[in-house]
Image 1 (cartoon, rainbow, N blue to C red):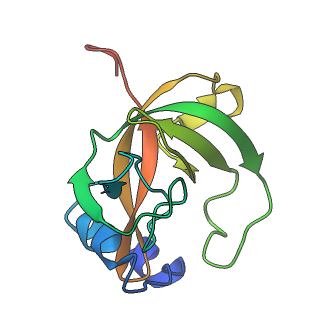
Image 2: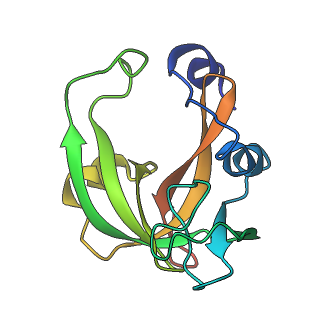
Length: 144
């Protein structure tokens, strides 16, 4: 967790329904609830399954792998992001199925040319006192 991240970027709102998600993030793990009735992974975390409305949910750890589904390069800084522009706001498709909005980090000068379908892996970045999942490109073995 960097000081800049802890001090500058605002943290998420945490509710009783999302607390297990954020607790896992602070352990550098990505967890989501799965509906025991229809087997759907539920993202964003909530008290019921949006597919079948079931309320019997079981939390499970995910692989942390994803592919880039869509992205935009933001050149206008939000509060706490002044030193980060330009930065990547993305929608990624998790290996397990759900899509989520996040940031892609660690792309360096290539951030303007990120290909759709790019293989990504989860990482974590400080926002306030909370770690949040972000994604970085998976580098081939031996790549610098």
